[in-house]
Image (cartoon, rainbow, N blue to C red; front, side, top):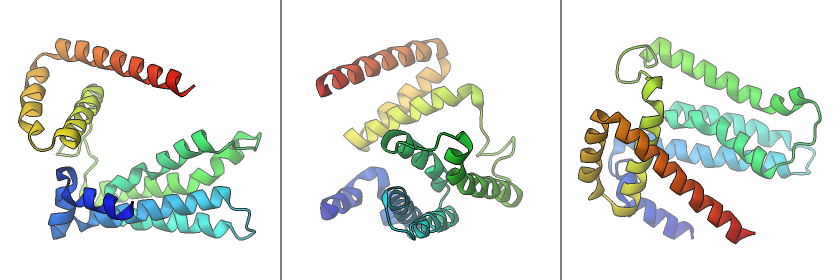
Length: 198
């Protein structure tokens, strides 16, 4: 399974730059830290060992190492929160005890974003990395369609996606209708899947 996963990662075009360009090996290092940290976090949550706090320390170290490699590591706290919501029944009745394990990750993320803003000025109101909340929903679903299309069809999908994106940028009303239709179809598909599961 590991060999087939590695082979798929190697030959699929969506991650080609991480394999083919030496300057993007940081993606691979961040991916390693992500997996290492997530595994350590799962061991911390599930282990009965008295020294299991060591796993939480390893998770925090992996998070820091991953942030020094690539910014995708910023999503890591959200992934562990989602894991806890789905798989762990957090037994503490007090809400502040439930949040306590996430505080180091939130603190590190804030420090990272502050340093990144101070050094690279990458989060300011201008430049390539600024955020436009008005277009957030459109960008999210547009990128989702682009990635899914490239994942399933490959590079042949990019010209189709570019034409579609340029057209929908100038016709926002049509983009809103398409977004609602897509959400309805996805909701019906997930509901059908859930009924089959039951």
